[in-house]
Image 1 (tube, one colour):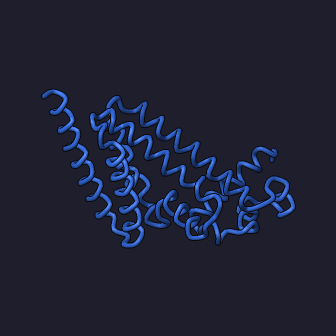
Image 2 (cartoon, helix red, strand yellow):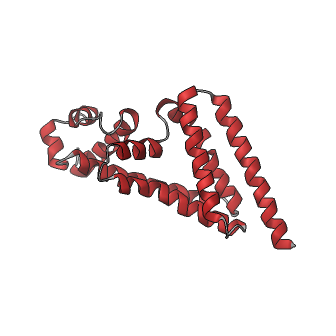
Image 3 (cartoon, helix red, strand yellow):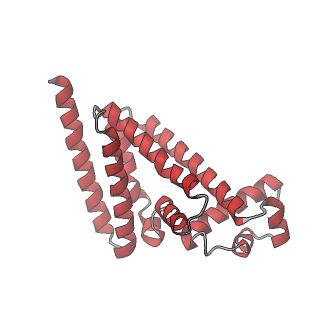
Length: 196
């Protein structure tokens, strides 16, 4: 196993374990066991759990940027892109119902711990916020784009928390349908304002 591959596997397994069990409740030994390496080999790649957390957040940011880029490529219209974001709670429903939102759970845990990496983890939400804000500007809602972006973020986090708490698939689907209907309504408002 090459050095790069081992490091990547450590980050990948740490990411999964931090999500499934929490950062605080995941040990070096847990990660080493998941990767199948000795603790000594583990320390060759990472000296502290905080170093691993930094790498995990970096990978999550890169993956999020890649996902946002793919949504840009898949739809020519901002409403379609926003709909992709709204629908993520359905496409990730099984994981969310088991473990909650990966971004929300990590940011919440780090905030409770007053961990120095909290600000770095919050960049994940900032990335979504900035991207959604740009989509709402393109949709014709420049004046309230940030408020609308935060509304969509709050929706996704609220649905994720309640899906995790109540394990209700129908609730998730129903809320996504309602949010998409709301989005259609504000898209029509913007189109009417632009043509009027």
